[in-house]
Image 1 (cartoon, rainbow, N blue to C red):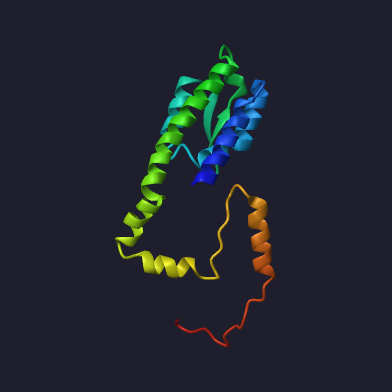
Image 2: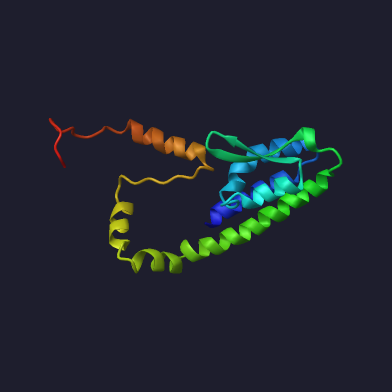
Length: 165
């Protein structure tokens, strides 16, 4: 939770350092996934930002939404105003996301959501398995290294025939 938020804060700082509209567009494109991981759960705030400032457009890449800077629609809008508006919206979304994270991802939230429902033992058994590996979409090199290491391991004994188990 903290790492994800720290990475998103760093991404917002990177975007906020833009010196031109072209620079802003490139920085937003490069850092959008990091921002999206901690903000814009419903995309409603992004839609509202696009409605207020025509320099922003919500576009789709496959099934993923991307907030983009439309360089053809920046006429009359100051770069500082656009950067400030994005910063304000993202920080508001961060606060909402933080509340949700604390409610569900904190130790207390986890205890309430999982332990009290009797799901803890099942989850614990899965998570302590040596077959479970975790990675961050923000550390693709680490994920790639983990996947390469897993692919290099022998598959183990293969049963002579399939069973219903």
